[in-house]
Length: 144
Image 1 (spheres, rainbow, N blue to C red):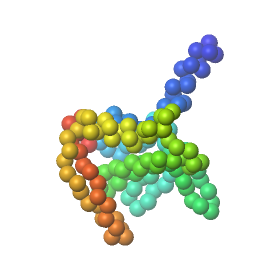
Image 2 (cartoon, rainbow, N blue to C red):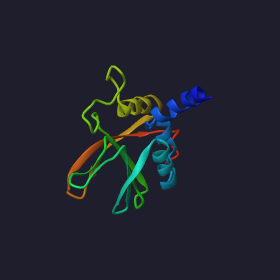
Image 3 (tube, rainbow, N blue to C red):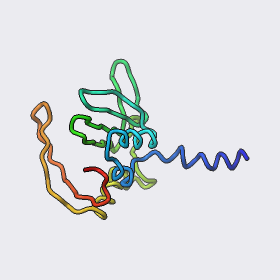
Image 4 (spheres, one colour):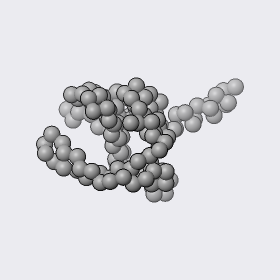
């Protein structure tokens, strides 16, 4: 029985990656929290009206919190953002065994395959810095 239990736990422990399907399921703050928790993310902090979750957060009283993957949900705007680093907190590269794809690359590949290009939009943050980003329309998305 121990061997069977161990074999069943390995996929649960090793699979902690946000997927295209997960992103398509988000339609509220509760679904966002569900996706974060089920993928091994932990609550990091609240900033203004944003809920911030990180994966394997390294908490340091001097340097603050570090994580290679973040998820933010804005309660005010009812929107969400995922951020993926190509390197881990410890400096190693995230990706497949041959280092060709990381979580970001896998999700973008699915988006390009399943969704329709919409437009390039510009986001301006509180410091008046502008960032361009590509938008897609996805029929599978539960998000408004």
